Image (tube, rainbow, N blue to C red; front, side, top):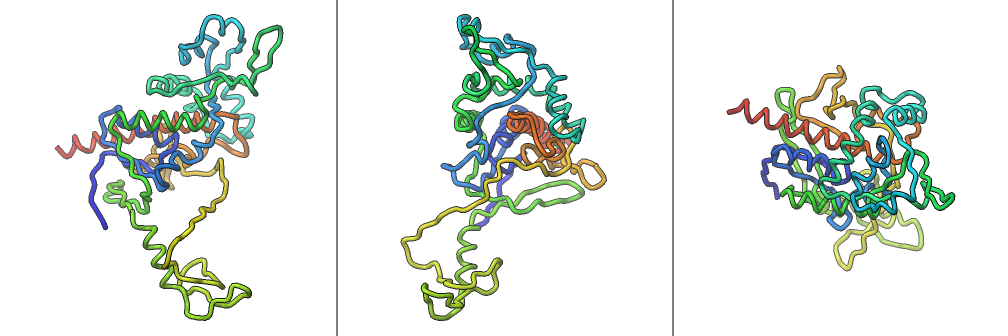
Length: 327
């Protein structure tokens, strides 16, 4: 069944970067729709499974306490957290990527990191110190090291929980089990994004139609296969018709990808001529040019949040400009 739905900003995915983009766009007054291919009980993507460590630049303990107002003076007196400024962050990023990180994007990530953390806090994301593996105790004082003293409360589980709670408060609509499969382009701008909610049933029907006749014999390669689908099933092909059915999802465990589309520092997707494609924005693991070969721990979540916020703002402002021009 097809349906028409109008929204100012459509966001594909519902992880950390996507929800930051959704909240940011909504802040600007845009009507936002989020599409999540998975079911609601599996929402969050890889962000759900992260340890929650998030790397940002800060000038000292007072910056940390500003995002953790619950920290008591007694606790503060028993910890030592050396400053980790933007120069150090950028140096670490360039060191582990072999100097390949796009300067414009690297600079944006580093310089926007703390203000994005503060913005996340303002939207209900809580943070905790990483005592277990980012500090050591000496003389009764916990010394933090490596420029990575903070994680999201309850790791990735808590991050996704709180981002979704905030999205709901703001009236952001999220469609689960909804896969985006095509971008519609008119006059050199993205104008629509069709959604197929019936893809699962269509896949089952296509498979059933492809099953060839023949005798089923589970004790040997029976040659009873499929025809017309890719990849084909060579043996033991039976139609999915009578329940009960048991489904076991299988996927590769990709926790980080270093490829992605070209984008500028505001999250606009660039074409082959490095010109912005009107109406198309990117954040999270889809943005290329930041990480190569390796990355400073905790930078993945930070990059998703920074560029998610920027892309959401850019998308909302673009949508509002289009509406103003139409009027």
